[in-house]
Length: 374
Ligand code: NAD
Ligand code: GLY
Image (cartoon, rainbow, N blue to C red; front, side):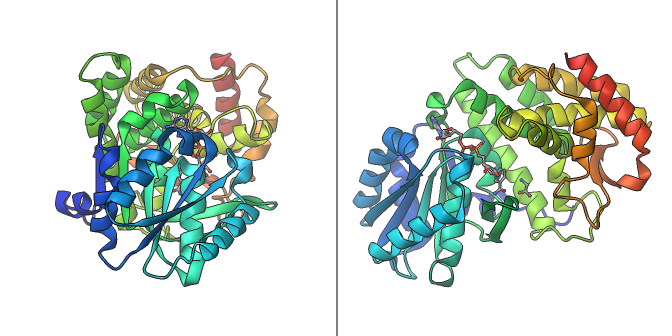
């Protein structure tokens, strides 16, 4: 691996804690400097209702003027239309180039707020305040921002890394169980790519999360996940299309070939994305075992860990043929050929092009996998 960001690098722009929400103002001041006068908060009604007041109070205490735009709740509001409304509200609030956007919410709010920040006056600073587990460990880190369009999810966007990421894991206490499981599946994805140590710590946390020290454990797991993602991003910040080595940013798509297909055949209404990734991890593991790339013990460990993080929706109504056809539409396909991230073992990702995976094997493994889950 090229460069592991030092703890100092990370700590200077990321603050993760438990019960630290009231210090967001000081954090924003440190990250934005004294030149920034206004912080424009992007959120939704639900999250702002839970945490908005505390965030505003803290920003004001640190000397900022604040203004807010609330977008609708859910993926269907991650659109250019919502972004345009946010941009108009930013202009009405007289946000200037030295000011910043702060996204308070899950990945939908973070992606849209970051996108608005990336294009307003050709780009102003963005602070992420993620309030879902998925946003804490994944979407707030790495600089991908954007919105959905009629022609696909996340097809309009920009790379615009946040000037700071601030998270209070206590915000997760109000998160619905399914959202927690979805974020935890993305944690399993990171851990499977990172190595056995993180995978075992992830399993240990989710197997006994009611213990008193669970909060502290979660803070360090979130930190480790962010450090891992930051390291991968650092090696390939713009996801070079030509790269197929194990250090490419594309490895973060582990589990996503089946996940995208499952979401597509259920019209994006049945699974939370992370839940589909949970199944995607297991299918990729089964396929790697079938291709004699990955050992049985690693596959069994992945089953144990995915099952430890929470219940996944039933696959009983899912048609293997339909899912297999949806594989061809995976956004990550390059020149029409499927690319799939598989593991040689825990912590040993490889990217295989579709021509190295016999379609018959991929299909029979899929059929058997779906049957096993029913
Ligand atoms: P989300 O933003 O839709 O949030 C899930 C739900 O939880 C929403 O209803 C939200 O209002 C609610 N919520 C958020 N925080 C809460 C809290 N603390 N308490 C109670 N409810 C809360 O979903 P998500 O899973 O956070 O993010 C998914 C989005 O992230 C997708 O649009 C996906 O494309 C994007 N994403 C982006 C990246 C990236 O690198 N930019 C990576 C992964 C995912
Ligand atoms: N979530 C995948 C990436 O950020 O590249």
